[in-house]
Image (cartoon, rainbow, N blue to C red; front, side, top):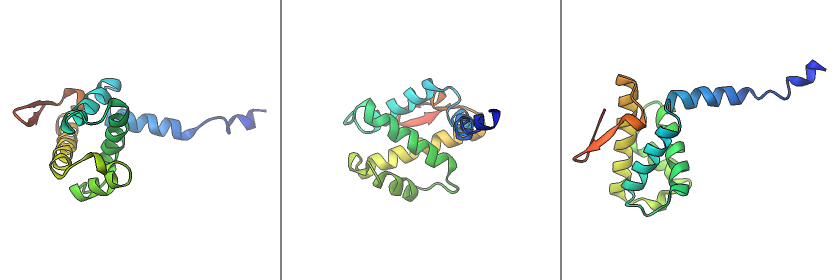
Length: 123
């Protein structure tokens, strides 16, 4: 009977949990901070329900794409939500995602620890 238990275990769960911990170590605090910043970038033209998955998918793409570029972000957003962005907002969102990558890579700081002052991100 134990043989059939292997089919009940989902190895992807563990992988996704590890990935989530790497990208968003402060969990919900990071998700809320990133979602709020995206809504701010978009001048609150979309609600949290729409912004949350956009932020989560985009941060994952930025984290796991080697040589993440603005063009790569545009291609990603074009699949499901580019209509919510103008060119300036795409630039700002790209800048935010790059700031998060740098903060995570250099200082082990996550989205909830990255702040914005005078249009610049710091940690």
